[in-house]
Length: 175
Image (cartoon, rainbow, N blue to C red; front, side, top):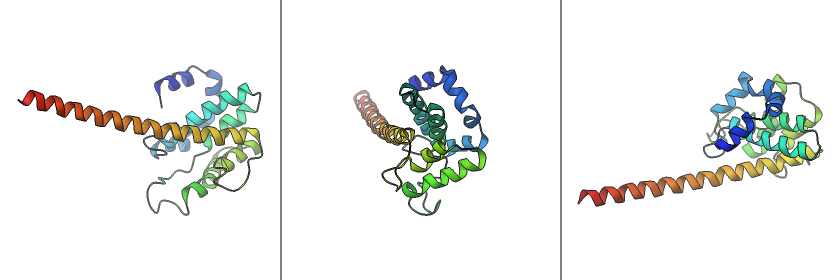
């Protein structure tokens, strides 16, 4: 997660209060052990999605509390989907239900939070979101995943450029 976003999160007490019960739960913290997109883990991804949902839903005078909580739990599937045999079915289609089952064992979820977790992969998964908050997380989740991918491409390009420059310098000084 980018430093600027981390600072925004750490300086927003209301946001932190909304997800405090969730954020520091040992099972939720396990999400740090599973890679989500590229070099981002599930916990960091969910925290970022949650923060953006909080900001958007609050600005639109929607149920930003349910949106924030649901977004923080939307990818609580607790397995490495990149490893073959770590789960049944195609991850994109099955992980919302797994995340919901895991979250509902620990937290009491309201109807919006359930809908947010179960429908966040729409339109990939069947079932149209029932609430505006659910549509918002769907869009924010896609935005964050795309951003994570672009950041990975940028970082790879920078690394390749740095290696190339290092080799060039070594070649020049070797003479």
